[in-house]
Figure 1: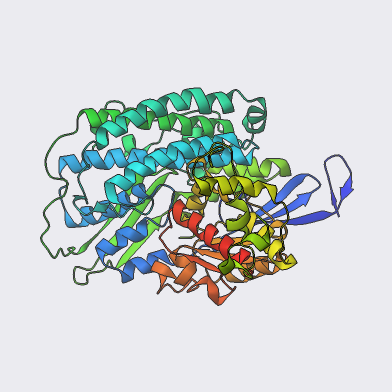
Figure 2: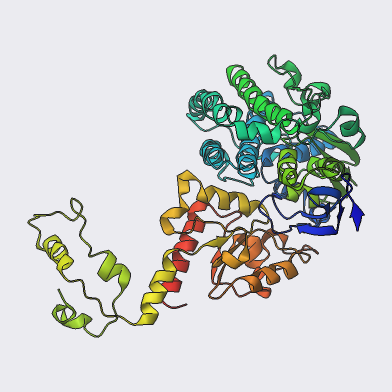
Length: 374
Length: 195
């Protein structure tokens, strides 16, 4: 028996949420201890999708590993590939051709848009709106169609290579991209913002819900849109610049100070707008030349280690790679999955909240279990 | 046309509902009312016979095959493609399988979309047992079919058919929404045959 604040006595109830639950965005299990409607403790149980990715990296060659890096955050695959390829390049000291860097930024930002669209759609489902899901997937399909034209696959692209990318842009791809961006920009303002921002139920369920102060976010190692939604201006694209981001004039981190679910929603929508601007700038300044550095037929990674970070859709995607200089496989490849670190804050966020808010808070974190469990 | 008037070679063959009933139903404009083509004329005239002979089993199987409701059981990457096949572009509701149920007790078919780990396998088996009969399983993707690219991982199940009986395998990593749609269509065929 536990006593509530109102002086009423209720029985402590343990509620298992997941691993098969539509709102846990995968196979997360939450053990919720409830007192009436209030959550008094939350214990996340992970590992239902642990596939041993980091061990598999050690068993595969450097090039094969790129394909497995795709699998960790399967919503924004390109960004993981960038981190993995970047780690190899940092060890090997490979110079990436300029055109490849521009193409990388274009596909990165498209991948980010695709990831945020999935989040927006499923978050709509979480808080009770079905239409945004259908609209978001409509736009995402177009992005995937373009990826398919680029590298032959809708997901799990295997597009990055150490020293560049696999293929050059196909003919007519850029004009298709520009047409898409024009339409997508309109869709954000006209469709998504109106149906969600103009919706009283959505506002009621997100504003002030799941408030995460900046100091707590920093203490838990939260990164990405969650951190920027708490008012901390920390974006690896401008604060620890990689690729050609420092040259892009439109790069400006999207920050909202409130720290609630609504602020995170605003940050992600803002990032989609930012991605459109970044892609446009890259397309306008796209140089010619090769898309892949010449490494010879058999490329051997020299001895060394590196930690390469990329601002992923969820936060800091980092690969810490050690090469022993002899074997064709990495000696160790540790992946820092931002979802894993963002998930740490769940017990803190859910403590003392209402059961009805659990799904709204969880959804706003935007984690992917493939990256949490790896 | 009644059963007796059917061509001799098809006598004694049980009625295939897809071909004999659905396909022969005239749709004005499509089949061509007043068409000079005798074949379409006959299809139009078939509207007159509203007597169908069949067995109860055939009828039940036909009815079951029309809307297999899947269990929304997304595990990994394939789950995203499973969403995409429900989305407007690849509208899975054309085949009656768009109602993803969150509870296994309301579902007919379990689409195992993604890698099944050793930790997940007992839960998967339990979910399968919670589904009411009749039930079917689609193994979506290479991981669920055979282990796929995690063939040597220490943590994953090498094919979901080691835990539950699988009816349809959909290969791909992840399978395109079109592939999943075909898997659902194949499952419909299997169900209407009494599988």
